[in-house]
Length: 319
Figure (spheres, one colour):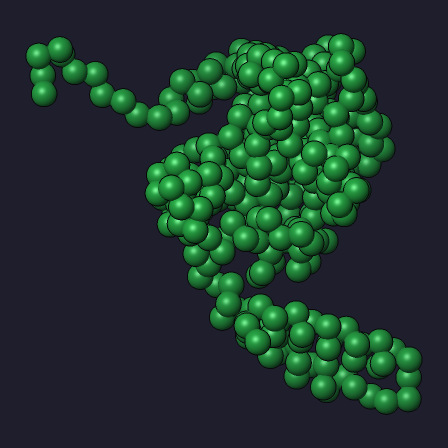
């Protein structure tokens, strides 16, 4: 039995004992306490020094909270907006209006499915052109009414099918980037799980970019990079390290603005704690952004993205 299976077994056993204890007749509190101490120690040992590949696995964990879970726990009065007014709706990217501690905000969120049927409906969280155009429509609406824009990113990438190419997926992403660059309202993006390539960036060009502690953000998946670089998808572990795609590394590189802490083992271990941390971070960053004059906000956004990456210019005759 692996350490992860041992954790699952202990969690199930503790829950079983709690139910028996609640039913009365037998006092199991000491046994529950003993198992909880053992579980806590095992979690600390297993999750305190995660490798990049282990964080990738946690970011993709099927029980990890998805965008709709955070909408329910962090926001209130969510009102969904559907359709791009050209082709139709896309269920992988949801948009709408909500309140964050009473403050109206516009939401752009990518949603994966938990069941086979839901994944078919949501294209496994991979957005199509109509989804990105719907997002742009919502951003323009938010700008008109002065609502901040919040993005929750969770996708392995934009949908790569023939349909997307026929409907100009590249153009839809480019239009979103142009729109976000010039939005005259504060914007915050949070990578809550996977942040894959242009599919994530299309709603992620924000004034502040945050990541949950075990989220990942990269131009390509580890498997895709391994297939290109080594012609071997089994090299995904090595690719995950080479891509420098984890939240702590990206914060150190200055590519994101903050890391939202997760419970040991990942957000799915205690969704309520993760939601509270996410809400605190969103409120704090929005408060800072809204305190900035508009011209300063736009100038800072321009400088931020002009400053991404490094290059050196040389004269033609220099080696």
